[in-house]
Each structure stands twice: as C-alpha cells, then as structure tokens.
Length: 124
Image 1 (cartoon, helix red, strand yellow):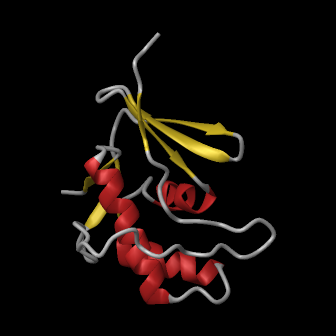
Image 2 (spheres, helix red, strand yellow; image 1 turned 180 degrees about the horizontal axis):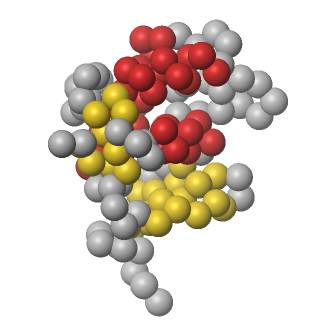
C-alpha cells in the first residue's frame, strides 16, 4: 500500500444550503502568485470525487489534497491558462454578496498552496 502524504484541505469554505462563504486567510503572509500571471493544472495530477469533495493526487510527489466544492471550482477553472483575477471575477459573478477583494485574496491563496504542492504550475 502506498505511503500517501495527506495535505490540508484548501481553505475556501461553503455553508450547506447557502451561498458559499469565502474564508478569511489563514495567515497574513503575502501570496506567491501575481494577479496577472496565468496558471494551469500541472500534468499528471489525478482527480477523483469523494463524498461531495474532490481529491487531487500527484503520483510524482505521492501527495494528495482534498478540495471542497468551491476550491474544486477553482481547480476546474485551471483546466486552461487563467489568471487569479479572472477566476475571482468568475466566482463573484456566480455568488451573490461575494466581496471581490476577499475572493481574489482567497483565490490567490488557493493557487499558492496548489502551486507549492505541485498541483498547479505557471503558464509560460
């Protein structure tokens, strides 16, 4: 049996029966992704649904990551090269009451974490 390294869930939270609520950042660090940079899913990442959430697995690093539905939406947007700004704008258009600056900050955090885990790469 493989020795998987579990990674924490991406911290964009949803409330059942309500519009998704974007969580506060977990720290005050500056995010590693620039708003104008494009990102895309890394090759060889496997994706599987699990109990209403999405699991990403990288056979290269032997790591996996659990995404809730909102983070899974960010992941799906990364099928093609896209900027954090464009993803945040799309999320804001889908959810009433979403605060654009907060959504952008959270999208940048998700991209940064996924990039550190090698699930997302910058588009050259």
